Image 1 (cartoon, rainbow, N blue to C red):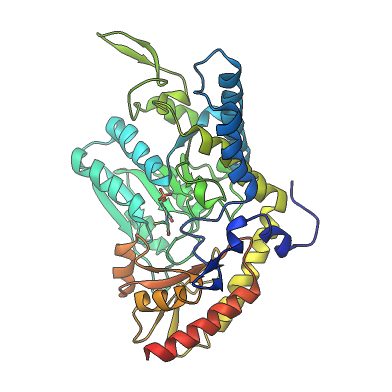
Image 2 (cartoon, helix red, strand yellow):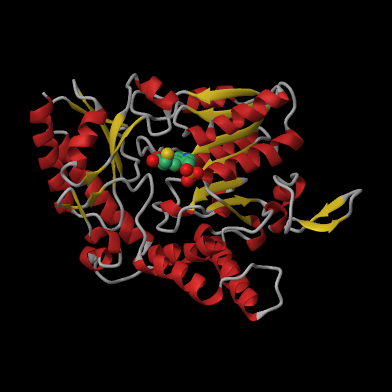
Length: 410
Ligand code: C6P
């Protein structure tokens, strides 16, 4: 439930032990949240507690520890189900990240349903994780990838998208919010149009799940994927949501323990959902801890966090615009809390090193979106991304450090 208390950023900061540390003698300013968010103490404690008190394999043992671990693991599935509004817990599959979730779909769905000449639509904004798996299956099946173009600010060309759709389109796989620019795509419309042409729609929610309200039933997407580590949870846990009847029609991704019903040397039959897609011992501790990341978001309230982050984004953007030669890339209204920029005559990598010397963590480079950088005609950008625990004072520190760095570089 959303909190009605005023937003107390200092109290939120106190829940994140890492924010106490110094980098190069300065207080850490962590603005690389789009890469991975820091973890609240309750997530860190959940991992220690699991290994200290009830470490056991799940869904198999008939002993107390196994029962406790299984219950905690399944509680995380229920938390994820509620977090994204899925109808049934069987529709939530645990993977190791967004990347694995997309690979699972491209293989387990693509192997069954793609044929030569079929088309898969992605967009120019995609992370490599939503490009390469489709290229791999397209190559195997003789399918064709089509790419929705963007304008200079990273807005999708929806007219071009509409023209691309046809009876050949089998899958539309598009990012909800761009990791490199922060731009939010009109995902409802993208999904509706895909369905009108009989295609399925996959939403890469790696950057949206933590910021935007997600209801997979009202979105009506066929798949929604995201990573636990960007939602204040641990690394090594990803989520694949899929509509039940579609997941049922797909082949297993990997074979092994847990995903089977009966095995003989002649033939094996597969387990029910969600276990059919969870072969082998999963990442039990981190899946269990994920629910505490989700709990952190729910306790503070997504709307409250979003408002706080929007204030940070607006403040940072207004200050950055004053820097000579600086251009914000993806300077649009509908954005998550990511600001990506280039500065005339300055290589992003040089800037990142100078900022790190002042205790500031930003990401620079192509952000695993090389084709997007080519579309924008840049080698890379400097990206600052904000989370629930960041402050206006930290942005002032960034701007001061940036101006100091530019004096050294220019
Ligand atoms: N983006 C970033 O710094 P994994 O690595 O599987 O958790 O997530 C991959 C991924 C897929 N789609 C989008 C939109 C993403 O942002 C990411 C991860 C990080 O932007 C690391 S490259």
